[in-house]
Image 1 (spheres, one colour):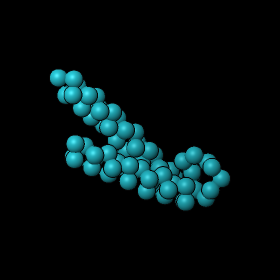
Image 2 (spheres, one colour):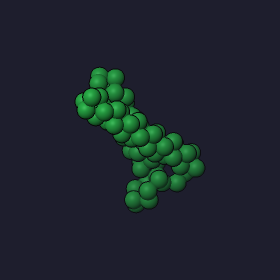
Image 3 (tube, helix red, strand yellow):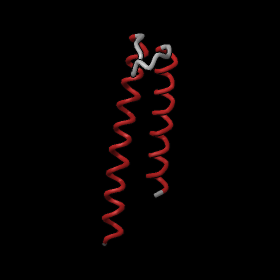
Image 4 (cartoon, helix red, strand yellow):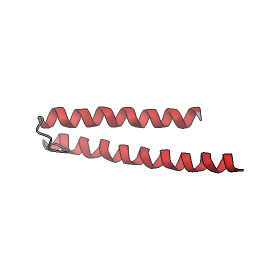
Length: 70
């Protein structure tokens, strides 16, 4: 029973992270269209937003992969 509870908590944790990365992806996409950076790190807004978009996308894929293989 303990093992099953651990997997349920882990699944909830992964779903929360998918939501967080999805929100970051959407925010970066909106900011890209508006022409403003997401964090304001001093990089050109285009580069900064694309970095966040790509990394968020790969993070979402990684969590989906981990859930599917679990």
